[in-house]
Structures are given as structure tokens and as C-alpha cells.
Length: 397
Image (cartoon, rainbow, N blue to C red; front, side):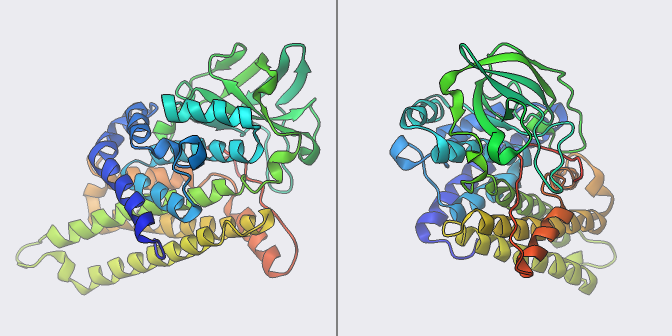
């Protein structure tokens, strides 16, 4: 990514090494089996990247946003599902930083740094729509032993893989999320949680995200982060979309790298030269390279401006990055299959997985229409903010 310092680049290089040597070789198997990438999570913990959003004073890397999105982009080039699950986990770490008490931070951050515990984020619901407002049907209520949660969540990433799940719920079933949204960290072993276990999707298969139902799930009093409505005010929600943008770029780059390698090596007789010397192939590769380079510049600029932006500004920065990388990524992964021909459909090569993963994860909210609306409002001087609920939610706005 443009503009990184030598120190930042050194962190990215470490991520590239562990991705190349350990994470990428497992990606195809995880995809086929549609299981959590547990071994890759362990590798990221052992190399410090499971704590990349944990502040340094609690033993983490405390990465700034430009370095963070570049690390995500790098991991996604090896395994998109590993990158996505770690992004979900890392965003929970940012919520803890913004909303948790000192005691909560010490407790939960130690779970990550000392034990390699993953934290999921469950926000998507059957009736959820973010076209104009964010509503939660899952309810959280006071209980004599703490809190009780009832409701259903869809696309529950890292089910059976994480140690805690950040559950998005409305206090006492209220509908105004500015006054009712409450986040609670629910232990995986809590009673009252059931899953249908169904997860057989086009792509992002190793995010393992079936539906989950809460029936009388009781959690302790200090499991909640902050007060009602705080989660939409701290500028963390918007970071989901910015991280997605980095992942999209990583997936698309994998496809383009394969096409470039193919063009350099493929020879069609009687021509003695590889097809890289054909002007048509050069034009296609040039177009795709320019598109990804342009998208990378937009992402880098959004990440560089992130720390100084307020939540509304972050919503705009995230929207433009996710929109540009969505459009570029979809075009690149689709066109690469045409360029490399029939082998692009073989599962032994990474191109078809990149196509499936990109097509699946770009469905995550906010949708293209919602992003363009937000960008248009910003250009017209109409104040707006993106409320982006986490989770793999292909339901259109």
C-alpha cells in the first residue's frame, strides 16, 4: 500500500511470510470442507496478528489503520476466509477498546494474547434491513443473574470456533437503536444457544456462518460493553466496511497474479513466445492492473484519514473504499477467468475460488446502493452515516 513507512512495511512483510508459508497452502482444503480455519488462526496468534487490534499496553500490536488494512489485504491473498474471520475478531477488539472498562479490557485482551481466543460478531438477522434504519429483533433484558438474550441471528461467523461472540441486541425489545442497541460478549459455552449448523454457500465457505438461536441465554452482568446506544457513536462500526475493502483487494490480486503468471508461461504453437507478448493480452492485463492500483490508492487514502475522522466522516471514507474495491474486484475476478480459459474453472487453481469468494463477500452490507447513497449525500452536503452491522449478510437492503 502506498505511503507506508519502513516499520509498517516490515509488519506487512511478516504477515506475507506467514500467509505464504502456512495459511495459503490450507485455503483450498478449508474451502472444500467449509470448516473454521483453526490452524491458520493459531499461526496468526503465534505470530502476534490475532492481537493486531489489541492496544500495545495490553500486549497487542496496536496497528494503525493503514497497516491493519494492508495486513488484511495480504492475508486475503492466501485465504479470504481467514482474513475475514480475523477482521471480524479484530473489530470486536476495537469495540472493547472503545467501550469496555479497564477490568473488561484486561480480562478479554488476555484471552487473545495469552490463549489465542477468537471473538466473533453476530449482528445479522432474518428481518434486518439497513436501507434507512437499523433494527434488531434480538432482545436483551435485565435478569437476576445479569442479562438474558432471546432472538435469532443469521450468518454467525466462526460458530463453534470462537470463544466469545459479540451479540447485537435491543434492550427490552425497543426499536430505536440509538437508544436501545446493546453489545454483549457471550461465551461460546453459554446455555440457551442453538445452531442449525447449515452452511453450504457459494464462497467464503471457511467463515462457517450458520444461523444461531438464543432462547433464554443468560450472561453475566459485566458481559455488556458500554451503555445502550454507545456502539453507534464511537466510530468502530464503520471500520467493518473499510476492512472488507482490503480483503476484496487481496482476493482480486490473487486472481490477477495467476493471470499474469499464466500469460508469462503459456505458449500456443506454432508461436514460440508466451501469450504475454500478445498485444490483446497486454491490454487486458494493463486494464486490470490499473483498476486494482486505483482501488488501492482510494483504500490507502481512506485508511490514512481514518484516525482524524469523526464517525460520519468514517462512514464516507468506508463507503467509497468498499464501493471502489467491490466494483474493481468483481470485474477483475470475472475477467481473469475469461483470460485464462478453461483452467480457470478448475478447483486446483485459485482463480475459481477467488471468483466465488469475491462474489460472496461483496454482498456484505452496506450494499452498493447504500454506499452510493451515502457518497451522494456527502457530495450534496447532506449529513449521513453508515451503520454497518457485521456478519456475512447477502440479504439486499
